[in-house]
Length: 140
Image (tube, rainbow, N blue to C red; front, side):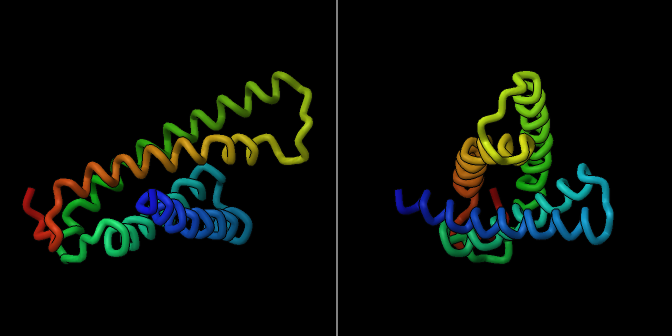
């Protein structure tokens, strides 16, 4: 359980990086939200990759970066999938029309789906690190 809690803490910092960079990209650089979200999400998950491998999964060798493209592809698919799911939840909540919560519907949808996203990311990273040796020489 401590293993998962440590991952949650590292992911929380990654989520904050995601949110801050998303805000900067969309508000300061005026990027469309879809591009800002994808770029900021990749910043957050790359941070999680680097820190979690070193501190949680104890994979410190330079060869671990051989696996980074696999992680990025997974995250790209995951980000797209959860983005569509968030859009669906927003549509359903907007259709209902009765909102008892004082949060924007899009933010509420993201918050509701974050635990599932966190769990799937943890499971994928756990499986991927099983293919790495502790010194991560890049050989499968």
